[in-house]
Image (tube, rainbow over all chains, first blue to last red; front, side, top):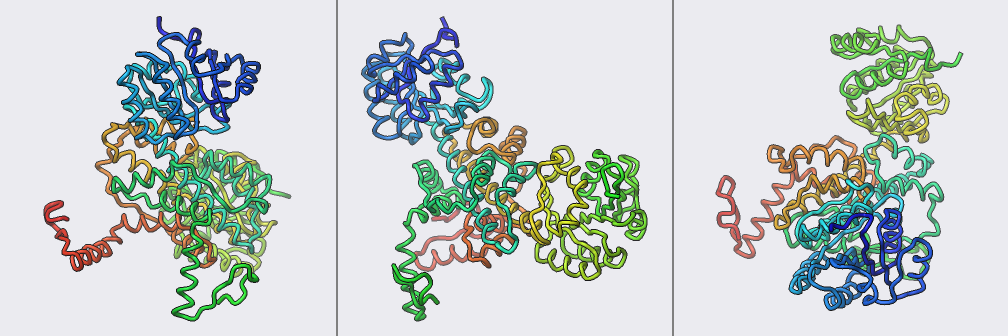
Length: 318
Length: 318
């Protein structure tokens, strides 16, 4: 019998910000979910809240599923995901499906697909976009893997996506889902930097007395730069456009870096994505030593004064 | 008596791709329009089509309006706009309003505002976004000028915008409308380049056999990079994703350049917008001489072969 929304039950390991909301959305879609996380109390809470079945261990979770089992990992990429893939390769059997929804590197996914494949276990890599908004708006899902495994997964994808027939795609073979997600995030970095530079230029033009929140809101309607990222930007600017309490420090989480490495390995220019990455490094203080070197070079050849750390702002600066 | 949609009539000079569609949208909104363009036949056609009154000259157009007159210029920036502002400064009288909807430099607008102001004529600079889609979806309007003049213009803005209360903004004093539009276009350049780089990286990854049209369409729903520019991109990729008949040449039209100059004049870093500008110059062939210099440098210090123009692709390349 083919699994349908009504009869289907899958396992979810990792019930954090992403995994927890995905379970909620799957339950709203009528799917059965067995969930496991290190923090059993948290699983219990989700059980009470939305009828997910809480499993105390990966073993328990696997035991609660009927073959062909689907186990979706929603853990941090790297060691936590690696360890669980290894554990599942022992617990699952031929025909079962492991889905990795983390932001894993696509080459790790290709390796995991091969290694699980040796035991007949099928592996699907799923890039998931949508963040904390996914619960209500749905998640964009970029999926790679063998067609039969993806077909088995289809009811899950249809429930998680913004609509059953929209916002999810079987991109190609194993690894292609995480590859497409990686490029998606690279584009995101570039777009974010473009907006950020534009708003910084507006902010610098004090003589016009511009209301940046009103401008962002106006651009949302009919302008060429309207987008979901702009919607969010208009939202937080409406609360506070001075941002005095926000430190000028921007984190990054792997996928931007990998996109730039991909550009270099393929010899395909991606200067805007690369620059947006470099500006995040600069915001993290990693341009400071280069700036010190430049200041001292100017001092050496031109006698230009340099600022001393801890000194008054601008003192002696030429 | 205050002008309302029902009684209002304005003049439009310039009935090209933008001006013509704006007249159509204003007529749909119930406003009276007298239009003038160099090509009188074209004005006649619009008269037949949508009830705009065709004027044979700027003089005729001004004669058809009651004070306080509103004359909207929708001409190419630079000389055509300059000449018409000068002409209108002779034809109009104190209290009348000239609107410049072109992509004029905001400093030109500030100068024109001052010069018309000496004769009591009020000047409003209006950045208009929306392109060929504006007729149906409405235009985003970024307006600068004296509050009383903008208030007079409000019924026009409400009719052109996506909705009466959305997508238009009185940004600030004269010049600020075109300034905000300039930054808008700078952001647009950076966003476009970010998408372009991402799709180029997808295209280069031949081993996954990716369907770029399907990926763009999927990203439109629930992903972080969803936007109107992505909607358009999904549209043309669905028709043809190989783009073999499209030359890799990207034009530019002033505002991107001015945004980069603004960044330099203010000392505010905008490396992504600047790089997107430089990549357009490169696409125009303006990086070729630098590439020749680099090839000859490599030849000089390392003996690396260089390609000769007209030679077989890759022949002798090291």
